Length: 292
Ligand code: SF4
Image (cartoon, rainbow, N blue to C red):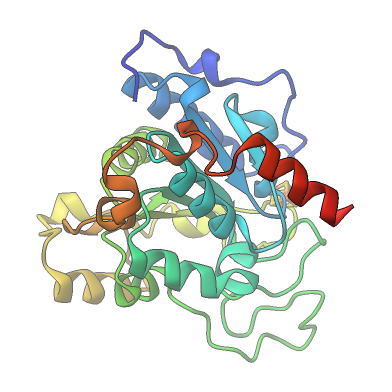
């Protein structure tokens, strides 16, 4: 990371978001712009990787290097970027359908490998880009375009899933609480290891259940309750609460070597991206010729 005097405007791209007015993703974008500015991380040292969905348009609006990749595959690409140059700040962004449904297996394996990156999931409990189908976090009984008689499935809990998979930083934010969200993002980016922030980011167009009115009276901060972020059991218990109280904040943080800390190839010689190719120019030319 490079310590520089920066403002949130330095992370604003030339493209204005095309999200619906009131979409929770605006709060997440503002939060990340503020977090990176306050940490003084220069935009050219950040890579923002996304999959597919409304929230996965994020790299177009956030000024840094960006990759808009395949549906559900943002974490696989992000891990590749991190291993190619482990001195970069890698931030993956996307939604619940992208990350917990189609990309659910990647979350498990990136978490257990403790790849040093931050994963920001804008969880609106619906597929928004495709105009309102049930997602892995939709509530039971939710009536959507794909479940006109009500959702029959049990939703996954991203917090307990990430903890069970071995994630070393697991948090939940709320897009309407920008100050709290910014602080969580700063901690996640500074964490040495895999950091998940699941964020309630209401879809005002297609999810009328999990709205700002739903979350406002329920959301409570873990830090106001003196939660111990090293207590695995308490983290799981708090994450399972879903009723009049729903917790936001940092559930669990622990130290563990990252994949790039352990990888012998990366221990000496700096990032792979800066090393000379192992093949000579002649060998490379011969291989390319054979493939043509
Ligand atoms: Fe946001 Fe929903 Fe509109 Fe997509 S459809 S931009 S998630 S409000």
